[in-house]
Length: 167
Image (cartoon, rainbow, N blue to C red):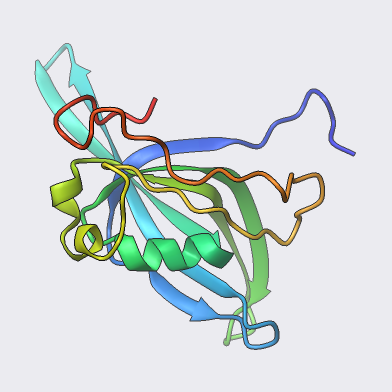
């Protein structure tokens, strides 16, 4: 049961550091994609009158059908919105030391930008304008409405001009 005063939610807008790497889990055959996402912040130092950039790198993990979507349509430098949860996992390294990492387990990945920016993806049957979304399979799928058909958002402008912001 979920604590009503608790929430694990991450929303990031950034650019991919590399093309997602798609692999299959040997025991189940389930697809998983991993990639890095960079977010940038600007800081202004009043004393020196300088603006500085700070880049934060995030490790993203995507499961199931959405992993295949990411591998097909995402590439290095592509701007996306990632919505998901923080997950921390532990394992033992080859040298015997205990290791720990925190990742974002993506629930939704939405493409940003114009359709013509998608290169090969735009020619291969993708019909959304600058946005893409695929339903994912989750290990903790309890409580998830399996019958919901999220699909692709509608394109009222017919793919010409308009606002590319997904919200």
